[in-house]
Length: 98
Image (tube, rainbow, N blue to C red; front, top):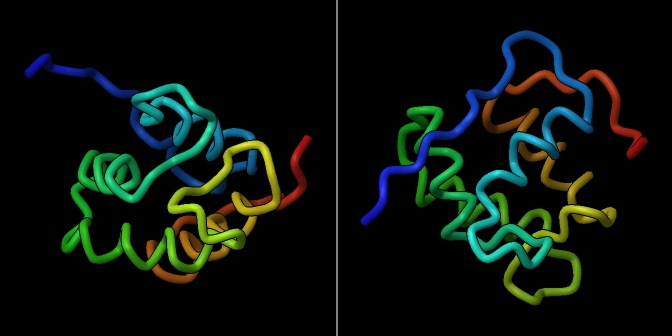
């Protein structure tokens, strides 16, 4: 298994674009969506306890079309932002896309 180096999540209040850019680095298959497993890796990089459980909850909360992942370029990601704010104590200043 190759060792991957990820950028850390910026501290303080984030914009939606910063959060999306941080999350996009965990898109291992480059399909433009974050699967539950990819979200688990992202949460583990933050040393979040019970990352598998929170990843499952995050995908369930954000996956509007029930395809098993969160689209990074669509409004599903706004649902993931809301989940991160309420369950992961991430502060996101702007929920707009651009």
